[in-house]
Length: 264
Image 1 (cartoon, rainbow, N blue to C red):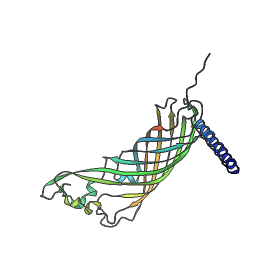
Image 2: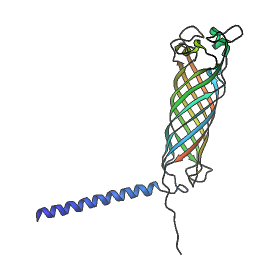
Image 3: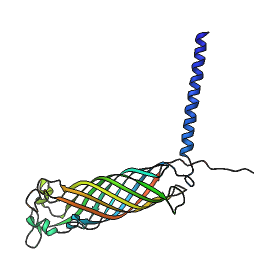
Image 4: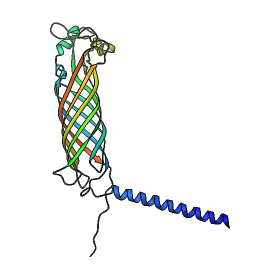
């Protein structure tokens, strides 16, 4: 009898705990499902991004306007704080000072001779990447709900870029393998950034995007052991800055609150 009593008491305690967990779960669900149209909500937001960027500082020696595509994930709290991580792939086709860069392997006419003794055609491109951690704040204004408004963000991360040299026809053994690394100007370093603009999170979850003006500044150094254009190791430090406009398409993960029905 005493054993049955304790078993019965244990079952009651288990049921109470399960009910408590259920109440907590339902409370969390109700909190998470607040209506985006009238409440500031917390949510993760996956995003895809595109930037057009203008170089400044030491970047202008070799590069012109470029683009960056990428993506990441942000977390927006119900107090409208924003934190996240993102990455971007840098690409462009405006590379300057070609003659200086390839002077050691070019003829008087500026041509590069291929392995068969003929002129080859080379195309130069800008390539790179940017990884960053982001944090900031949303200030509700001029939007359809408290989750839309002006955003101000800051970031820290790592940025690297280089010159990609491609052979259009013929071959150029002077630029193959490790030899090519002596001409690509690969640099990388710690980067900081800031951006400000507007975030829209629609009531229907269909239209969610942000448009910002951004500045990215990096202190970079050469990542190559030897630079053929200066015939020595490049031990200089560089100030590389991008200015640009960034457009993000966001996919929020919050659950929609159930529709309200009124009966008369």
